[in-house]
Amino acid sequence: MQWWSAENVVAVGTAVLGVVASGVMVWYERRVPRRKRIGYRVQMDNPIGDDVRRGRANVRLGLFDEAPDMSDATLVLLRIENDGSQGIDRDDYTGPERHGLTAVFSDRTVRGVSVTQPIDTDHLMDHFTPERGFGYEGNRLRVPRVPLNRGEHYKLLVLLSGGDVGRPIRMIGGIREGEVHPNRSATPDEIPPVLSPAARIFTGLLTLSVLVLATIVVARDDTPPPLGCERGSLTVTGSTAFAPVIETLAKEYEKDCEGADITVEARGSEAGVTGLGATGARSAKEARSVIAFSDGPMGDRLGLHGEKIALSVFTLVVNEGIDLGARGLTRAEVERLYRGEVGRWSDLNASRPAGLPRLPDLPVVLVSRDAYSGTRQIFQEQVLAGAWEMTPTTSLDCDPVKDRAVAAAARPAVTRCELASTEDVLDKVAAQPGALGYSELTLATGHQGVRRVPLDGTAASVDHLGRYPYRGVEYAYTYRSPAPGSLAAGFLAYLDEGTSQDVIREQGHLPCLRAAALCD
Image (cartoon, rainbow, N blue to C red; front, side):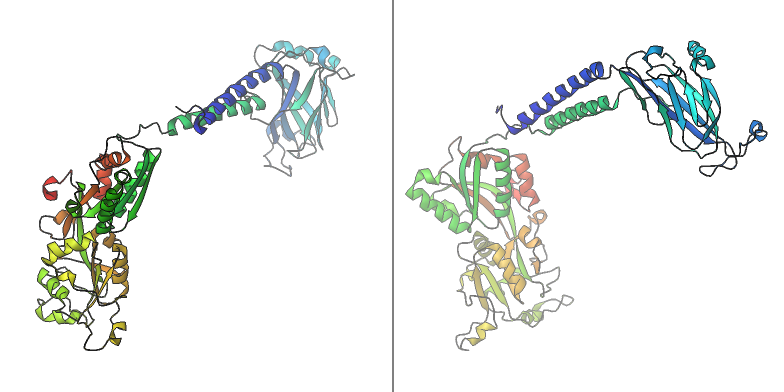
């Protein structure tokens, strides 16, 4: 276990932050707020006259109809509370006057006041007398020196005139070793917050710390590495048709197995197998870090160790300007095309049944893989049933128009060219009108500008392998049987795992572990 990994550092740091935040919160609540504090808030500021300029003017109610100068009357409910952590005595008020606090109502005149208090606080009412300074004059309301235990409060219902609702209301006065401060406005039934703003901040920090720590624990990938997870370097070469599968699985293996470095070099089946044999003849140690994939059993003649991995499906492809319909081509027509007996696509129209699309008058261009390709060899053996594909190339760029410069006597009946990879074949077929080629099925399926060609009415598919001929086994070759504990052995074992088998199937191949009879 790596104690100083980035994940552990973040997790420990977050936990420490949470503990510190919790401790600071406790200290703050116990020490800092231990002051004497009186808070006040406006719980109601409501018009009761019918000439109030702001807010909603009410219909004047019964008792106010006969009161003079009440057309702009308003009612204000003030809540005065001890929201500190200590009780407040009469001597704690610091003003020189008999009263303790003064409520100032901007632009309004106090016309009357009523005192309310919670149940079991009748003792507070004894302090609201003129002898103790309770009274009003102009826009000022004098509030007596009322002793308040922690959490106690009282309310003042004040009748005002001469101004609008919402005008500023201030409470003037001082508390020894404390303060008088406004609280946020609240409805009469609202319960004050349990925690102070500072306590809420610290609680939020603590909560955030716990959430971050939980996220790290949940998101952390503790999944054990797959069986056969090995370190080192490995080169995978060979088949271009099977390369997309290998590239995907190599990345997954590197992600799951720290310390594994897999390089994929798709050079063609023959080139990969021959290269592995040459490497083994030169250095057996170097060859142990190489796996060559091939379309078909190319490595057997070199004495290489081979394992059957998957059954691959291949397909003929034509330029999208050639519509062969659901029937596609018969194997006899394919043989005629590759023997060079059909120079133009329209030449096939006479032998095609009625109802099939008519083929255009375009020259046939045969785009093939080079002689090192396993895809080509399977095509020759299973589709052509012979060596017709061995006819020499006649063009470097697969363009019959440029080939017209060749003397008529030397001009071939059909333009042929060879390319190094499946992707090159697909690109050339898509770009050249009248072109015909072949490809691994999955690569052809996603390629723009080409059509897949059914053989004898059967489309290329892993679901049609019982009657579709153009298919072949993908082999994985090593110089010798891979040594236990080597990256080559680990990667080959990885190909047999369930998730890897799913990847092989999703990319259009049939794993041999699931189709042993077809791979034999």
